[in-house]
Length: 239
Image (cartoon, rainbow, N blue to C red; front, top):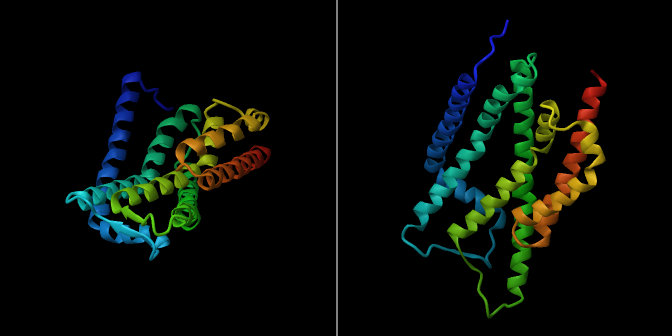
């Protein structure tokens, strides 16, 4: 028989799980700082262009840039840890039959979607977005030089990669909302038109101010949304 936990015990468990997550960010960030040079080279590879000149304007810029890159590395690699701690804390409350293997399955699916989103951002969104901005600047050739600071340039790339990576968690998020009873499958189906509008609003808020990036965020979200509903419908149909 499973012992019911008190409110204080739940808080202590939540604190422990959050500490593990933050500790994983620290550990992976330290590793990321050690390999920061390699990561920076990897990040700027998709947009290597003779027209673009990356500059460092402050003596502390390289250090701050490496810290930013290291933190980004830590957050990305710690996401599976976060999801495991979240699922292990929440799902047993709503479903006593949740097993370790089920949690591992969703962690594996989440990692796959995270990698898929990262690759989409790296190979599609970044080159397309940078090409868009470069084409605008090149129209002023001779008047404006493409001299970007390394710090701001990498922050721009990291922002795109993080948004692209995490929006691909849509199937996991919808499944969790249905599982814990916040909404049901029919609600998601009947309100899809409102959800699509929200996707375009989020894309406008979370991406750089160019229509290409916004469209490239919104449409994958719509496709993932429809895929999620189809996937969950098949799961419930086979029960």
